[in-house]
Image 1 (cartoon, rainbow, N blue to C red):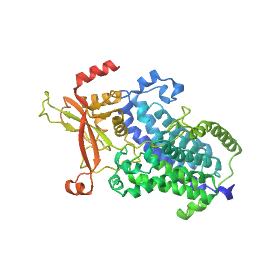
Image 2: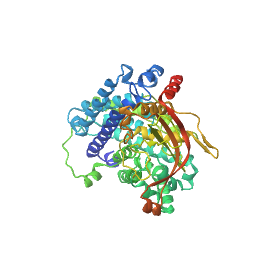
Image 3: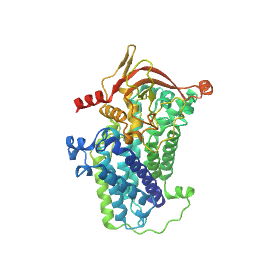
Image 4: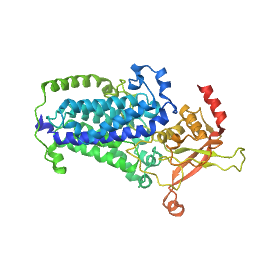
Length: 491
């Protein structure tokens, strides 16, 4: 087997340290945002969720007890354990210590994701959970690494890539005619500093990029189970593709985690050419640990039945779990690419009486476009959950010749607007700044804009990265008392 797959002692070390870094980012993002979004007084409070959803549907430690203090304890525990693992301390002891640390990390983050509702409904959350669970069985640095978790993680990478490739072929026609990238860099959730430049590449480059994406996601994954040279080549292609995506946009830790999974395709013989580290001698794996690994194989094969069938389904699921503990999931990304970018811009005013002359001040977000002259920021691998949810809102709206057809407002958005009218300091920390330094606004409103990247001449002349055109009013001006009455009716 070693002649076919190679040895993975150094690869194990790099994989575990890299994954620990991503867990650290995830817990830090949760610490900074979760209490505001989902805490006792959040937009979608956890106590309300727990009352309506049974434990078996969303297993979480918070069913035992939830308060913002309890959450902060969970988040800091995750940060501490991630830091210990990143430093390599968890791997220096017996194998069961490393196993326990990773399983605790998995349980802690599972507890967050399962009650996170719409704010945690992203494919990279389940990816992080699945990778963390199987990382627990990599073993400590004292014992010989097993191929079993390596191959299971490659199987995960296979599902990530092939699922993404198939959902594209079954989804938007622009993937089949190789034109999706002509639009995607402009309409992606949170563009980064290079997105403007990627958008303005020649169309033949965009078409080649789509073709290359199809090859990497539909063909290369099958090489992950081939002999080492082919597997390494397949892993290298996947990593290169992900690095291009990292350079062109902000996708949280999705691409970074895929890169980390891609590292499992390389044996130590290849890795040592880049990182010539000498590792200490290892001991044989304890018999009991081997038995645990065999059970892991059986469980993984059983859980793989539905994800495998999903590949052949005309109604292929994307980023879904068949079990509440998020193991052996189905993945996919951007099966549909929007051709036009719409943004909802929230504004407030201190004036008590509204007229045509009323002066409105806009709220700027940390990541999503607002001020047209602001350079799109680099956020990833950090995840701005509120910014991402704001990107989804326009998808519910139909733009017609007579205006906007809005089927209604998300509950979290109304509560977010309420917090702005109250001048809630914790909510304002999720934004780039507060335009109201004294009293909170008397009214807020939300305008609906079409955003486009400027061209080279416009960029040179105006200094703006974006140009925008007002389409209509998403949320008419509303005062705090009126909004609270609406929310009381919703409740």
